Picture: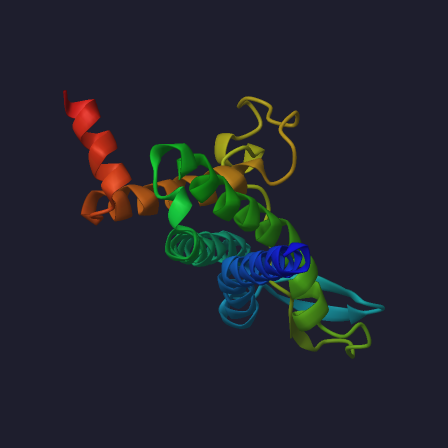
Length: 203
């Protein structure tokens, strides 16, 4: 009897581990795909090589940086929606008001992690060679900086956000998109706990 119950407990533990691993892969996979699409499809800033791994940037290539940031914002927003859908479908116990912070923060953390690692991945996969001959035009790897809490949005006279940890703006963006997704799912859901909580709120 003891061995049978122990085997049952071990089986449940293995199933929980498999389910957690599947959830982790399902949560991170959209962000990996978004980063790969961004590295391939984002506009590149071009420069003229002067040798020695250096170059002179074209005057009109500064607009590419804003386009790169905007494209990453859109792609990671869609990835946050996918992450919220994965959590909603795989973990029924989170479909209640107490599970909303988890449904919002986990895609937010994944979004922040992807944004912080995006320049490194772009340098790894799309960085131009350093031995380009003099006069050749090369395209730099895409890059993206902070979101929301950055001097680029407010200028030099704006508030200082240095005391925020790196990736805070991306965390806020991913959590906000995931929160909207959860709100839409809860609105159209027929889950009893959500319906009961909504009816108690309306009273």
